[in-house]
Image (cartoon, rainbow, N blue to C red; front, side, top):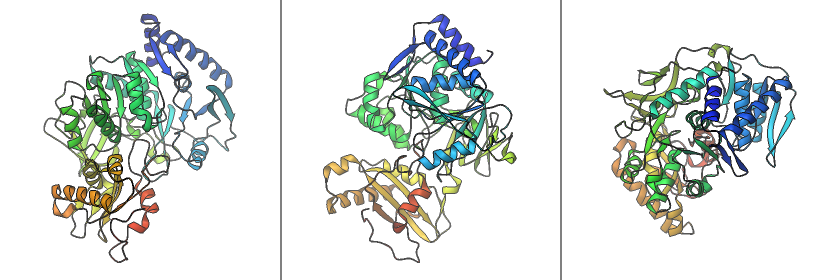
Length: 482
């Protein structure tokens, strides 16, 4: 076996055989035991004669063993995100040509054979098909090679340098590429203990207290929860070595609060089409507030007409789209800029840009970050256009709900005051003109958030279309509750 990550595991098994490699609620494996388990699973997979295997399992030791065995056998691994709907999962399996689905029943691996109509042709070297959750709810299969994966792992290892970490807690599903590569693969590369616990966000702070990891990958929403728990004394800032942040825009004021608490917050940026991570502000760098760091050594990042363009570790291509195979560049669809020191700033998604009636461009993620920086607002989705005033759909925070257990005028007044405060910080052309409070939080379960915490704008807009009339349509009473 000449796979460089396999060789790395062998070295750990020899040098620290009794060190814990993986831990989940059902038990743990040392590095020596992990290597033996992976070897056994590789033999089983080789004898199966399969080419493409889908993993539809919760975060667990078994998920990692299966994933590593498929990778080292140069077979195609197809992770199934647990937050996909049943219909999305069915389409994923059909689209990828998966021959079998590997699931768990009471922590025992179960094989479910499929009968694909055909095995769609894939770019040469494909070992993983990761399906992007996307903002539209229509997943696309991104084909990656072992080289893509290793390049990202080694680039991140180089950026982290000599930082001391012993334990990493996976708080995202392993089917999310960011956690799969920057969490598990990187952690095993560096010899960490990887903790695979419940990924329900309601339990994350409790898991952080229980396992006390030095490393975690967090969305901005989780960062806010960590900050709040730290301010309340439930978490100790000094216990963390790295809190890597990605998936969505982080407001500078949140970054500043983390700095005041001495939380080691480091922003990053990337996308599945570039094997997850292209930029990262590693320890020791004094990045300006709002930056996602500098490009990693495997990435070349440029700006073309305001759009971020990547080269150096591009995907192999999309499933069923030969025209996308072996690209030299990835046009990310993100607005951005690079300062004279090489620090990268992401300014929002091109396709989400609101063009106001006065031809001003407004990034809704900017306004959403401003809104959710207030203690009264937990989530926000902002819409607008040439025929629609800037409109916000608001989910009140738990602290605001506690102050007014029943939605009433008092509650609406709290939200109104918070939005007025936000507007006072914004230029006039970006003011929130209308807003409506929403009772049900946006989540991956109701298909209103992607796996990395981004708003699914089409889904939100379709669900609350009655709150998003144009200037030519009648409007419901502002601040109504749904």
